[in-house]
Amino acid sequence: GAVVSQHPSRVICKSGTSVKIECRSLDFQATTMFWYRQFPKQSLMLMATSNEGSKATYEQGVEKDKFLINHASLTLSTLTVTSAHPEDSSFYICSAREERSSQFFGPGTRLTVL
Amino acid sequence: QKEVEQNSGPLSVPEGAIASLNCTYSDRGSQSFFWYRQYSGKSPELIMFIYSNGDKEDGRFTAQLNKASQYVSLLIRDSQPSDSATYLCAVTVTGGGNKLTFGTGTQLKVEL
View 1: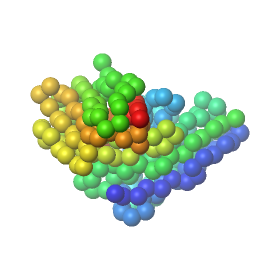
View 2 (view 1 turned 60 degrees about the vertical axis):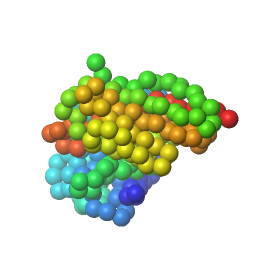
View 3 (view 1 turned 90 degrees about the vertical axis):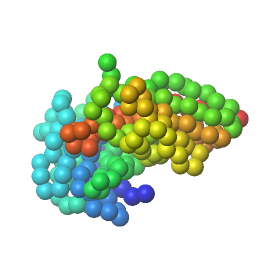
């Protein structure tokens, strides 16, 4: 299957700082990338959908000014959590989708905000 | 009503038995159906997808889809301890931009 990487895998930061998470499709061009958040013992919640070269589409209740998404190329999307607070601590997972294909998930980034 | 429903479990089966995982969905416009496996602390891994009514087999896994009854199931034959994980059902709908809607997952425990 297709390979999707995320970096970093784990980050601990102080409240008020910003954190950038990268998502890369390593062996295919991703027409669409998705960002999810997963709290303990809960399912994945879609945050936003991003297409290369265009603005991301955010799900209801997700603050676009807090969760900045940039999809600069067909292999890279970034999520920046701005002014992070403890309630933003979660497991952030990206997925990438090739044209007419399934979604493949990255390994996830565990964010802890102190 | 949740869009995609799964029994949270845990579902316990003995090693070598068949594990049956079920999922129901509310939107009749749902087109594609996926089963993902997620180990604790890890991201989901695609196991199978199915688009048409009936059965689809891949190794020890069989996905079953019944659009009239709006359910999709996953059978795991010859269950192994390594199959112990949470299994997530996900669906996409027409016009949904290929977005996946996930169920809350069923925890499977395969016991020795």
